Image 1 (cartoon, rainbow, N blue to C red):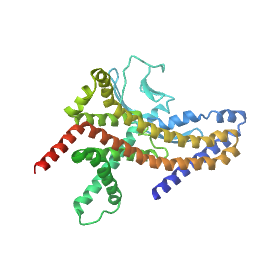
Image 2: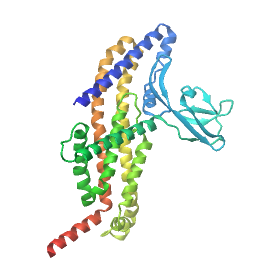
Image 3: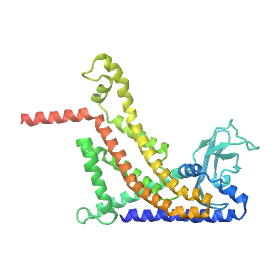
Image 4: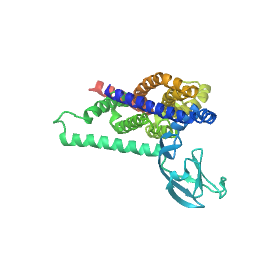
Length: 370
């Protein structure tokens, strides 16, 4: 509850800051008469929301008037025609200017000619450190530091001392994944896959929690991120299969011949549909949560366009709904990490299910013989 309260206060403070900045800007523009009204009407909630959940070449914190508070990230480009180029994304000036023969166009870097038009004859390979990439690296570093720190405690203390501090918080989670996810779905092979399942669970969880910090990147709401996780799970599933698994796919037993011809492509597609469902589920849930929170915050500015009084009057309602959805998102962050890990374990268990049943049958026969 303490963690939820701190995060709730954080998003409330963030919403209040947005309200103060938005009202100050409106008051400044309102003094310019009709021009101020035209500028205030330029606020587009949909565009602002999509901008905040999308990846970027800079870390944007907030805008006050015409001042953008951002952290430029490194741009790393390679072109067979122009070679390697490394510079700061700040040279693009938020996409308004070209630099070194390149320009930021709707989130993508393209090569341009001297007159500023796109040069389609130049092939550009973008290896830049975007906001999502930097946050993923931070998540990896956090995961390594947490796990190595806990491992050192176990190595130093062994079973002599009771868990304490962060070790006391993480150990029940590890035990839960082992006893409620790995063992029921993987049987006697659970130890072989437990390191992978724990890595997936904590990596998704850390990225989900980082994504809830106001101004942070929406990593788990990026379809490329969830697609890669699903692809890795697919590889693990395929390497866990046996002849019994493929026999049921290409020649289902106990089914008429004509029905088999229909089931074979369906079963084969099912091998790829399962990881695809993992990809879409994680992406859709995390993106939807961010959109809902930002939508409630945007209502402050939408009502503020009507009048400053309306903006101030609706702000408590908007902040209350934002905090409520934010608390739900904290819960969803844990649930989605669990669902992805649990379904991965289920699909891996299905890959060698025939072998598992065979081992159980052999064990029963051995017991009867004795």
